Image (tube, rainbow, N blue to C red):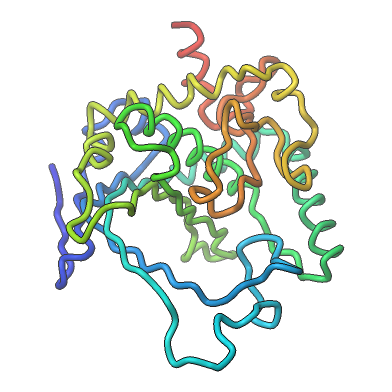
Length: 282
């Protein structure tokens, strides 16, 4: 059963299927899927930062150079329309995964993150361990969706919604939006939304996990103790998990395939460990 919602200006149109329509490959691990049939994205250029660029997506206006010699009452921007698939992971499953996984893998990346920020004289941000799960899942899905629906990987983007929510948990977020905003004024053709429907999304998820199980750089990639920029990735390289820079909101950092499929010695340390074992068994 589809529950449709349209905004007043029709720039944000969604459909929410019943999660029970999806097979266990999705419904056992994901509790919500929303098909975003149309969305609008506004991109604005605020300034340049060349000599001392910010380390990540946090921007400090004091480090930016103005776009013009004289202050202007406007900024250059563009609005584009596209489509996407949004989903949230089950909170109970995440908690179970956190209890059984090797937290030291991710804590080492967080320590590297803190060291980089202190070297740049900036305040490190808090990175929940589940962020590695959400972020890596977004990457492998984008790579798989690019194969399934014909979009170039540089045309697909991610938005990771991750927040612990404090003690009350009222604002907790465990969501990912994979979308494209590369269409014209009327949007895109609907191919990405089709991949998010029941009967298709299951094969996309299984295909993405099957891709994550094997990397042409293994065993070096899987056994890496730090790779990529500032050693902020573990088992993630260009052969298995990295995306074009325009697709990733974190600059291809904070990635690790182990969060999804575990290790050969401990498959259960991955969030999708049970499903990954079934894929291996055929």
